[in-house]
Amino acid sequence: MTGIKTDKEMNDRTKVPLPEGKLGILIPGMGAVATTLIAGVEAARMKIAEPIGSLTQMGRISSGDRQEVKNPLFREYLPLANLEDIEFGGWDVHGKNVYEVALKSSVIDGSTLEQM
Amino acid sequence: MDGVFDKSWVRNIEPVKLKSGESKMELAKMVMDDIDRFMKEKEVSRTVMLWCGSTEVFTQLSEVHLSIESFEEGLRNSHEKISPSMIYAYAAIMKNIPFLNGAPNLTVDIPALVSLSHEKKVAIGGKDFKTGQTLMKTIIAPGLRARMLGVDGWFSSNILGNLDGLVLDDPDSFKTKEKSKLSVIESILSSEEFPELYGNLYHKVRINYYPPRGDNKESWDNIDIRGWMGYPMQIKINFLCRDSILAAPVCLDLALLTDFAMRAGKFGVQEWLSFFWKSPQFKDGNFVIHDLFKQLDVLEDTLRKIMN
Image (cartoon, rainbow over all chains, first blue to last red; front, side):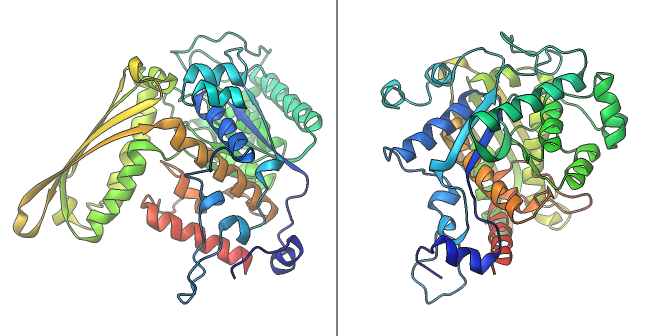
């Protein structure tokens, strides 16, 4: 049950269609939470930060086999969309762009935002 | 993109750019057009919608929310009980896009939109991302209950200075939030099941807007507990948390798992994602699970069932 499965093996096992193409995440309310999400996904793609706190990215699902030292990662176990395949979009009423909002909410420091 | 906004639903925000339309139905159609344009321009094959907007003024279920027909009629007449978040949710579901409600707003927790999600075979879920103090509560309370320790009182106080805090300074928006925050303890520490332990539990939640802290929330919890032979003890939790830092991974997980659920053919209310919600939306009559560890069990069980 451990180890990274190829897409084909995964599909044979589940019949859940694979995530083909890109996934859009549309967000009404582009405030601190949304911009922190976008920055964190970008940071993980650039490998400058780990996606800490994310069950799908870092969590392991217990396989029920107690002899097994390591359980499989959720993202190995399930055919989930990759971070590279996500596109963000959203609505708000403040008329500012994502960078301006992220800077103003000062959740993430300016130099990290600049880097992205 | 310019948003749909209504001052009567979120009083402490001054909009700069917003959509205007003849009716709420027209606004919903404009959101649908935005969705189409986004999907075409970004060349995406699937989309999920995730509400990260403000907490709206408290509202209760009313006639207009009860059926798809009355809701659509309400959209055409710009019925006052239809909030901006409901307009987005309607637009998303009509476009076969799952809707996830990150605020404690009523939004998709109405029969009209639940029915529509079944008709369109779209996954929906909510409400209110489980972060901060409530996350801590659903970690601590199951432990106290597991050890059969009594709890007489749980006092929670918060300061926060972000937009969320400002909006929650409006008593009517706070009422929506308070409801979401209170039910957590009452369901885990059930006075019905354990009258000797939790029969007299007094639970109080305060939120105070305090601009100097920005997004960095601070919470204080005092828990009065009781042990063997009724001897009292106290637990103090002082959590210096970053609201958006805790919410962002929850957003990502919800988006990815809901996209997966759609591919697995699941639709309607996704109870198995209750792990991520402060106030999980459940199907009518189903008992709501708040205990974080039980929620994780349900999530894993559901995934194993789909995958095996």
